[in-house]
Image 1 (cartoon, rainbow, N blue to C red):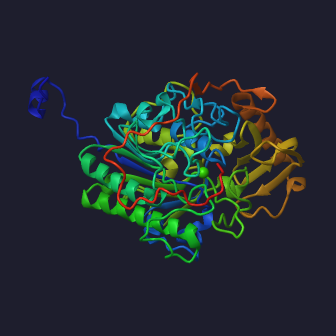
Image 2 (cartoon, helix red, strand yellow):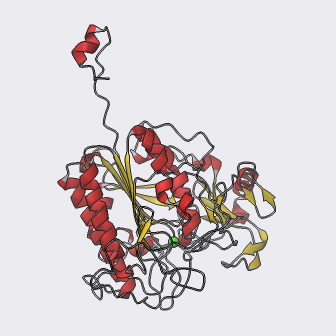
Image 3 (cartoon, protein in one colour):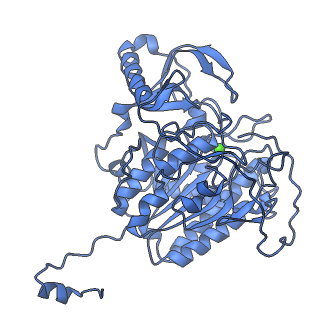
Length: 486
Ligand SMILES: [Ca+2]
């Protein structure tokens, strides 16, 4: 049908409504295993991150921002679905490991609604450039979960060839175009692809998801030759500084295409930096490292910029999580929420800096899960470690008894002063909130009312390569040394 002009509508007796504000674009950086203290704007004196720091200066830094798991797969599932990982059954792999493995029979259920799918009805173009890690079998790929375009790797950068896993594939869409992927060039190539995506879609709303695979899961992070050896913190610092370059490239592309003022940019990490000897990444000022339920593992840097809409140069200490992105984006885009229950909240009031806005998590409590076990809860400034007779203390479910502990993680960010004896009322209240979360999401000893099944395939197959145009020039192909971890 031909579009009616205003005059035609008036002739029909309809009022000519003022133009609704254009729905914003969304850009989400979700880097891998980068700690809270690894950026200039969060206190690093080692890494040079001027482009990322610019986001903090031109936007709001969220200082109590959480991922829903200290490891990759569940953390990514939560960001994309707005759900606790255990609600969507991605708290563990098909073999009950902490993250999905290559050729895993499990993946994000095709019926789950990702941010990309939620935004589709509002006319968004959607692209993912980076690391997926929500299932490598065809029904689980990003192209089946609302993404028009995928360029990157299907799982972690340390998941190289084994007896059962193929060479790490670099994929475009559903096709492996290179194997093994040249990991040194991942940040650069994902950025180039993302910049081209912005150019192609500048005229319509878009959702650009940038889950960069770096600093990643090996003890020697990767960087392109232009960044190798340049930082003051070895390969880890080189990769962080290349991510800063990548950020600058994206911000530049938004400006070049005149969409910066209508683009909400989020910059965060999927979990804290991993413990290394000698140390590499920093989770300062928080205690602990990636992979568990410490503040260091789950409280990550988060910068949000939307010129003229999100207050500039502000720090917000209200509890926010990656699960809140889906409902917040949907509301800003005028898209309906998924029909199935989700856990995240619409945080427009907090993000847009409305006076007196408070986190809905203060009343509800935010649960810290490690695999299927609820280990701690935060509400307001309080974090309660639940007393557990058998707390998971390693990635293979080794357990140890753990006492009840209460901290004020706003005034005592490093969790040095245990204060449960002085606040029995707070302990009671948070214990009751934990019980409510267990009822819905479950715990080691019980299912939750609200849990759904992950997707599963009977006969998973390794991703086979179909080269695009032969091997790239200058590709080394030789995997660099690295310890295998989630
Ligand atoms: Ca990770």
